[in-house]
Length: 575
Image (cartoon, rainbow, N blue to C red; front, side, top):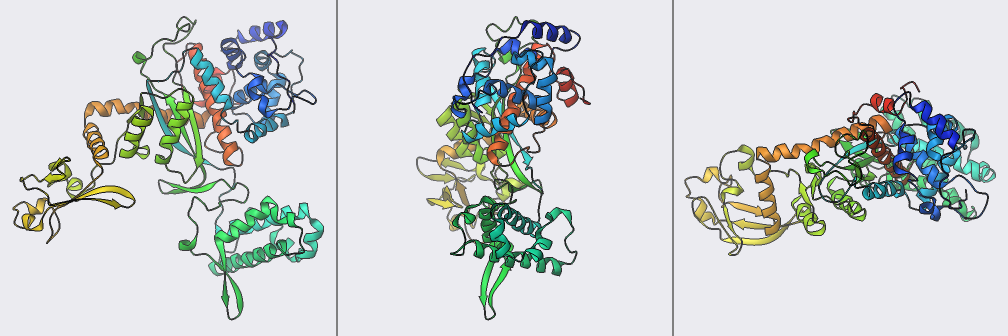
């Protein structure tokens, strides 16, 4: 596919006339509204890096970007999206096509996405949309935003250990059969292995007996090691070992099998659970090597996580953007728009993404003043760090004091003690002072350990309310001063009813996640690999923003059901 940058074509007169006549009979179509309000949203020059300037001219990358976003707004396959371009007057209007334009082959969309991924342009579409909205005052820095994550299932089957081994070996053999059929025919017992590894693992049922399943798993292991030895033999073509499927086979066998030397020779064994690599490194599929096993709320899944950030200013906090307040039909202040989308594998915790999300927002010039998050994203270090590095206040609950006294709600917890940071001393509720103050490291975290003398605590009449130690004195563990003071302040705040009412703002992001799942199908990945899955999420975010803007432009409140969105697009569920 080549590209020669050029301005988007104007909407042909006949196309405009017919499309507007049809649109007058129902809700104004999203595609037409986007062209009317945002014009040439995606310029070809923005994608020049990914497309050659020489060769037979292809479709405009800017037009393909718009088609792809609208494809996600309607949750269409590539074939259905190409069909819509060929027959849909609203898309011909948006793209500036003549009514008799035949459109393009569906494979063009797949090639377009591949080009974006290969050139690291996964974020480009959302960046361009948000830039256009910033210029119109519809999004801006400051104010409030909220972020939450949800699971994403990879576009592969969930496989147990036996199935994973068998399917990985089968995939390796299939790749070798395509790349070097003559070499493979001489290297392996073709008939025997064809019976064992010919059908996909999910097309038949494994043995019900635990003993027979273990025998089968060990047979897979022996065959896999034998195949790898043949591929790495001195007389084998070197390029065979560089095939992706063979590389995956090697990694999978290192992770799941080992060979022990016994009197009878090398014996293949499966790795026990304690000997397996950590989940972040462990492959979960031979076809998607980025997908990982993740555990949430007691349920295992194979796939990814997506983190969605959106504006959430209250109506009275949002100033009407210049030039937009008088739009006919515009319903109040601008809608809440997605400002950032981040995709990780399923093992990455929310707290690990707090700083990266803020870096993404800073790169777009859309850092909020207040960021509403759940407790999974927060820690004292992050609250302090985000304020120092980005000037953002994290509005989030923190974990409460976990001491036995605090959990029981009786006795003297840490807050009952007065801390004199200058004198490096603590005073208990009865007025006695500590005798030990020492910096330490506990579980990799810097702490301060404070101890009271056992001779002071032993005769204390309220000892039972202070410590469970039978012989020693009371011990306190604090974080460094700045972190501890932030933590104490946050714990005090979250017990206030007014703070809780304000924090309720964060709950609205659950509706956005539901909308993303219902409208764009975000719960299940369409493509293989982290980069393409992230591109899918970026396109989904851009599509949701256009849907919300369309509702606002048309003067409607934003319903969050799939049926209402499709109806607003001028479609029915059957279509």
